[in-house]
Length: 472
Image (cartoon, rainbow, N blue to C red):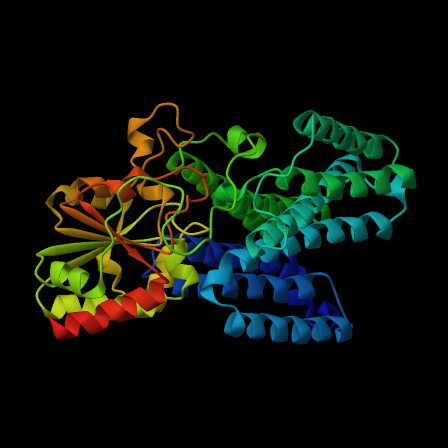
């Protein structure tokens, strides 16, 4: 393509290409930075997409590609699938969609490395390139199969409970050492097709065996970690094809994913090793109505009673959980909040870092319902205010409000930072039943004198509450 340019332009073309790569990288970095706030996340996503679009265009120009039939076909098909998914996929299914994105990202990196490996004579590939090819195949393959196992657990056709066998962790450790050894052997003898395919196959198996023993309670951490893996795999693919933009953008995604993984682990008071190897946390119950096997006192409430308590309060804090997302009740919740604000009630939303099934899930869900950003408070901001709060409405949350995390050293969630809702004057829990959450342990908050249970589907109970507020 550059043959059609004037000689003066051709002489500086390599420098111009690298300059455009630098500009695209800068746009991508700014886009990621803006993802840190709900108020700027949408524009940040658009900027990051623009940066990558520029990178794709300049890469096509840089690589002297003269036939575009397959590329155009891929763009059309991919754009159609992406646009359809963006329109059709519900917010409750967004964690599953992110898992798929991670998997495809890792798989694409592995395929790029595979293609580069087969494009040249094996003996002609430099040693450093063989190392990055091997690592890209290893990390990309693990990300691909691991992400689709996470998708299956989130979707429900694979059990959210830990699936293990005796010596599982030891076996995984041996496989990991074995794959690293195969990377080394591939570097030493790149002509061995057996080594290449063993590396590919064992890496795919390792992805399955790494994620399948992890319980549903830890899926937010797993999603963040797999996102990091996909970035690292992309960065490795950038080294394989000598593309600076891919190296930098992959490294940024990898680092951001690791930072987010660390934040999630701290929010759950878990180490990453415990998440990966602890086989902790299952699906949680799903029955409707109060649990039948408890002799503890439960104080049920009604829409009219909740409406009276909220309407005559000075401050109400709403703590959403995954149950809100499952019921698609965010718009009704916003309606309830609007009615309370019209009566002079101060309404705030307290968001736990691991509320929902992925980081930021609740923020995005509430933003979809046009909840003002300045009403959203993270755990550190809202916890000091519970002591002066009249009513806390807990919508479909469980483990993140369980006081056992503060009071019982023997509990598996002891030390996990929680929302201190038990310090409020009154708590009202909207929940289908008394069943435990993902951690699989009972919540003593449900039986406190200052707590009331509002049983039922979150959307239906909030709709009845909205109607009752009108009648107060």
